[in-house]
Amino acid sequence: MNEQSVPVGVVGLGLMGTSIVTCLAAAGHPVVGIDKDAGRRRALKRRVSVLLRDMRREKLLSGEPATALRHLSTSNDFGALRNCGLVIESIFEDLAEKRKVLRDIEDAVAPNALIGTNTSALPVTELQRGARHPSRILGIHWGEPAHILRFLEVICGDETDPRNAQKVLRLAGLWKKEPTLVRRDIRGFIANRIMYAMMREAFYLVENGFATAEDVDRSVRNDMGYWITMAGPFRYMDLTGIPAYAAVMRDLLPDLDCAKDTPKLMQRVVASGARGISNAKGFYRYTAA
Image (cartoon, rainbow, N blue to C red):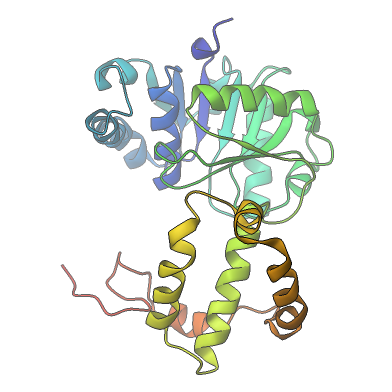
């Protein structure tokens, strides 16, 4: 079967779900979007159309947006997923809710259909518990915007059949991704574990008066920002000399923050109602539109 012709379902049509739908439609898949919110379902084609036009303008889409939209449908009924060869769950990060949605998907699809969960940090093994066919459930961690970034992590839970992970890795090429296989399940996977370790240290520096948020952002932007798009940490050490990093690690690692709680600054900012640029309140001051 032509992999482009495989119908793919997406459950959860929020910001990330819409971006995933756009990526799949651009790759030529028939796509079924599932959401209980009627407003999201009604808005999906319009929102995807805007993103496809953006892709076309940036030469990321070779065909016409209208062609990609032709085989996009929506429903609030999981039964609409019955012919899908792959279904991607993309609801909010709640273990119990995700498990419920995965059970609903299992009830609807064929026994050989693959089921992906788009999670940023929940262990895939935890999400597999209670499933009738856990071997077909795996993590598919997208970056935002999913229709643009080449980032994709495919995560094997303890009971995932590795052959199913390989099938998704092949599909990822069709989606124009450069996927990474996470061979053993671990909370946060690869990119998020590295990113949140950096964020923890950033909060430590600000909370303890070593720097302001602006200072931290400036240093990171002008150092890591210079090389991170061409090399990951291991390649960068190869390029710039490994022994120096070993010496720094010996002296610096014992002094790095190892807090296990959410930083107090983050707690205060969230408690104040800040959501970032969406409501003009965050770590920086913004002028409301």
